[in-house]
Image (cartoon, rainbow, N blue to C red; front, side, top):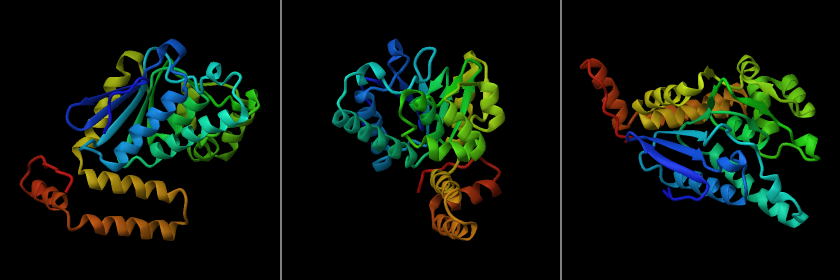
Length: 263
């Protein structure tokens, strides 16, 4: 897994948590083509080889999570250049969506447009009291193109999603919490600590169980309940012969903490 990037800071926390920080604070962590390439490479790499990473935390450097696409870089782009850049962004979104282990967004400040879509594509989010959100694309003559129209209705409901997307109006962290976009509101100085507490709890659990449960929940929003249950049972039965399943039951009966190996 590559960790040396120009626009991302990638750090291993403890043994099993990866902290990924969007690292262009001088431009509010706006996403340029280079960040798009590196985002894609990082999450594709995790899909191929997790290297015992069990949870990913995604945050931004400075006071802003991500302002969206870098509009200064986009100024003067031809249609062909724009589509080429967006194709890179599209593959990055899919790579994030397909990340095998949970991704928690630690929203340290405003998350607009593509930044908000990054939060939505994560598995869930904790946000600072300073966070604000918006999908502003229609105010710029475009529309959400990083799964915003797909993920937002699942988070906040269809009618609220239409209001957010069609007006482009910003909303605050309390509204984001009430509507279901974020799971928890934190004081700025406590945000990363609280997210890490949750990430550590996830990392303590059996890795294959977590990964298969994540996929099963994601499938549940896309198929009917019967077929979703068939997927759940298939995932469940693949865990029965694992070492971790035997270790979990043994540890419970021996009244000790389990030692999971991801096998």
